[in-house]
Image (cartoon, rainbow, N blue to C red; front, side, top):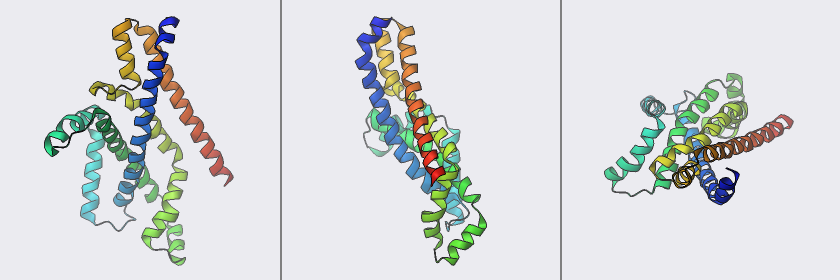
Length: 218
């Protein structure tokens, strides 16, 4: 079993590298889009009521539809409707980012809603517009106070990348399945894949701990 693992270690590491790429790119989309949606959906923004309700319906649908189905829609349906060809990797990044943004938006919206009304009034006294207060005061504070909730979503995103192997992305699980088909040794390979995900999750936990310490000291 160890020999099989050592022989295929370079392939497993290449799969882990693709997993990290999927994760980082989709996380960028998730945080940016999720933050914008959360701000737009909050009652504290100046977003028109109809737009707010439309965005809430969209994010509710994204949270209701399984990610696997969203991935298939992004890879097969979107190109047919738009005449735009997407690679399996690009479709995976977009599907992961958009799906995760729906959950991030709810964290951001909840944090903005719970923001102290006195601090809103203080920001107005300091001459901040509503938009400036959101950008410079409220959203940074929401990220600080909701760091654990956001980190949980980010950690979940790491594991969700494994679904992308179903459309041919050779990330950790895709590589693992190919090796199993060739070597017929599922025990070693599945354990190795599990270890890869545990390492990535622990690495993210360390990053979150460092961020928390810096926030505490600030």
